[in-house]
Length: 434
Figure 1 (tube, helix red, strand yellow):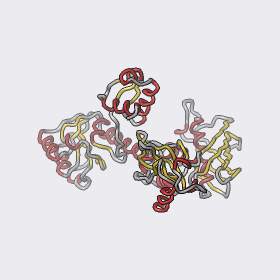
Figure 2: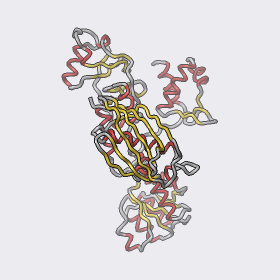
Figure 3: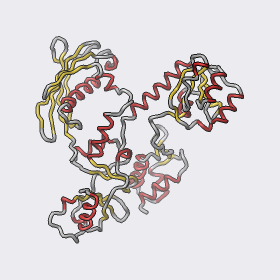
Figure 4: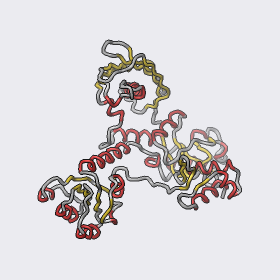
């Protein structure tokens, strides 16, 4: 076991909340401060330590990736500052939908479904009806419930929650949380799309083995591992040239390849793979190979995200929904109103919002010609005058140079008097699936 792995193993053995320091690790395990620092930073990246301002670096419990499509009843208790007064065994179950109990009990029967949450006041009959139909209960206004309801909740493993907020406030809080989780659905990680059972070669394998594996799998590129299963290179069938079949992979492989972490975003992977012309990228955890991601995987993931149903609106969506457009072969014309979401503290459109607007409109003119996957290389903008709320803006986006891998776009914004308000130049790299 290397010193690096020994430090990580030691940190894993510490109790949650234990403070960690470079000097302390160095002294305890007899390693250099540089080695201790690198190991602590890796522990931070994998989520087992965290640096807290004015406290220091502490051992924390690693948070597993959550089901972000749904909210658990336990999270709702924390969200509404509530108290779980019954049905504790079901607190980790997920909420399917919520119902506001502002109707007669007989009418309520039609809306109560298993897995739902009934938001209601001190109406015991409605509470009993919900629990009998596999529906949890949230009691608003700070009211409690009878012992009968608590017993029924424990028997059915359905949470009964009490909070001091009114029904409208509680419903708004839960709706906001669901909305924010839907926005997060667009964030796709490398671990979501990578091949978790990748083919690979060992450093002592011969070129003959590479040919056989390529013919078997129909793949052209493979990661190369050393004796400790660490990724040390990449090899492609195109690197063989005139080399003898009995030569080892080590003689032709590309050494020290770029690797990704499972928790890296697909957007970051796209950036890395586009800029460096990478076709496949090994995914490593604790320096060991855990998967592989190809450019095709990245493009497929990005395309799925753009077609994802039932996601919340991001700030981009809220701003762009107020603009209409028309297009021609190499240009697009946008027109729309500056909305309150775009304003800064002094009441004019913030340069952050305007930059977002201009850069998005710049990439849209490239996508209209079938180029669906682009990554911005550089973006330069100039503003001549402040932009007021409620003003109608005209934005013209035009491709001024189109290449095989790079394209350049000019974006100009005018006010209603045809005065130039802003101008931007954008350079983007086209991400190809080959």
